[in-house]
Each structure stands twice: as C-alpha cells, then as structure tokens.
Image (cartoon, rainbow, N blue to C red; front, side):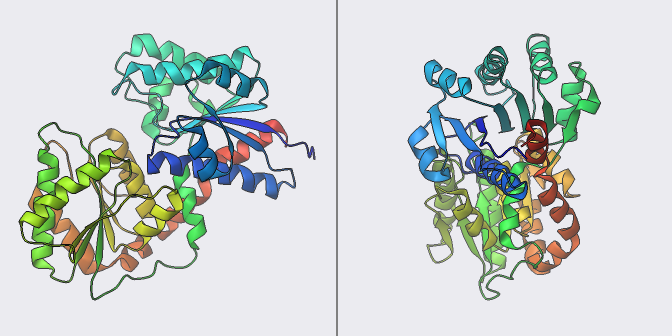
Length: 377
C-alpha cells in the first residue's frame, strides 16, 4: 500500500455561507479521510477552491485557495494528484450560464495539467442551452476517471449528451453520510412531547413572496390547532434565508404568536451544528434541498415545498412527494400534512424509512471509495 499522502483539490460552491453546500464539503472531506484511514494510508492533503478561503480553513480543517483568482487555482492544481468536482448543483444554467462555464473551466484546466478528474455526486441540470453546454459537459465527463451523479434524472440528462450510461454511477447526496455520526443503528429520540418543535427552512423564490405567505398561513393553522407546538425557523443560506425566515415570522407575530411559539435561528456556521438543530425537531418543512436531506439522515420526517426538480427527485428516493410547489402551494394541504406527521410522530416515520435511509447513508461514501481505488491509495 502506497502510504504517500495524496493532494486532492475540491471544486464546488464553497465559502458562501450556505449550510447545505458547506455540509457537502464537510461530508466529502470526512469520507476521504475515513477511506484513507480504512485503507491504512496517510490522510490526503485536501485543498478547497473557496469563495472565502480563511473561513473554509477554519470550518473544515483543510487548505484553501481563492476560487476566483486564476493563479491560486493554477497553483493548487499544479500540485494536485486529483481534482474532485462536486457535489451539489454545479452544472446548471438556470441561475446563470457562468456557473456551468466556471466549473467546466476548472475541469478543463486540470486536464491540461494532466490531473485526474472525478465528478462527485453532482446534480446536473437543468440545462436550457443544451446545444452549447451539452458537448462541453460530455467532453468533461468522458475525460474524468469516475463520474457519479445524485439522481436518475441527472444520469439521464448526462447520457442524453452522449456519455455512456454505464460510466455514470447514481449515488446519494454526500450529506446523507453526515447522519452516520448520529448513530444510525439507534432510532431518533422523540422530541419534547409537551412542546413538539417544527423546523422550517425557507428561501426567497417568487418575487411576490406568495409562497412564503402561504407557508406562514399554514403554520398559523398548525399553531392554532396545536397549542403545544413551536416553530423554529432555520436559515440555511445567510443572509438571504434569514430575511426569508423573518418574513414568515413577522406574519406569525402579526397573528399573535410571540417568541414563546416562534423563533428564528441565527444560522449555524458549521454543518454539524445545523444538523443537531434539525435533529431536535419533530418534523421539518423545507424548501432548501439540504434541509430535507439533513432531516432524513437525522430520522426527522421532511415535508417538502418544491421550487426545483431536485427537491422532487430527493423525495422520490424516500418514497414520498412534495406537499406542493412554490407556484401552487395550498396552505390547508401543508397544514394537514404537518398535523398528520405530528400525530404519527417521527419514531414511526423513521421505522418505515430506516432501511432506505441507512442504505443511502452507506452508499453516499461510494465516490470516495472509488477515488481511492482509482488513485491506488
């Protein structure tokens, strides 16, 4: 066994105060280190391309280079034994075409420098400009040593660009692996029966904020029906999600519910801190994908409000569906779903989903295992 420490560069949306993306990085780093330990190899030297290198070093105990400084990126890749691209929704052109171009450019630079590349549990798409970006994605993926995506829809999209389907592994989101630290062999502990805590993760999406107004209306119905329940708004992307959370909280305050019933969390810098907050909840109403993944891996029932196909795709892996989407959410339906989950309790839900959750937790480490095999560490 080669005991020489490898240098692995990780490219993704890191260093932007987004708990979900930081959780992806945390999970990838943990998986790489665990695989090295299991193989009896030296821990890899991990260098992250980050929007805030100092914060990334502080949070994750890795090295970091500024992702938007070409000389820093070039310097990191010149000393690399491998480049990991992922995870998360990096290759999509809905928010901006710049996202696709940036991440493909990093992959291309690595190829020029003869650095092996690995695509790690990416959610690919939506891609609107298929004629432009399809060939570029095909070239990048065909040149990679290993390609994994986080859902069947991403695999189908990548295959439609010409990549052989047998080269594409479908694996769970890396964040599912964070639940391994919560002792998955034991059922989740029931919350305070006297005051069940309802976690809520919201984000801005529609310009008229109508989806947030409907979520607030649903939560008002829940608080009226269950005087014992409390709402904990959990912002995942700071500062925008904090503002969205305050939008919902303000409407509940106007309805007469004070801080004894409704609270807004300040936001957690480290992903494990937010995971613990989610684990304390009896259920979680979530718009953010990773809020739903946190919930599932912690054994907390997720109730999804979908704004993107990736939400629907994840819920399907759990054998469930969103309660509605941002265009046509029904407040009564959301309130009914929340009240039903409160009545059933999270222990019962986890009992039904436990096998699927544990399988996803274990399979989330598959890309790290494959990378180590490819590098012969």
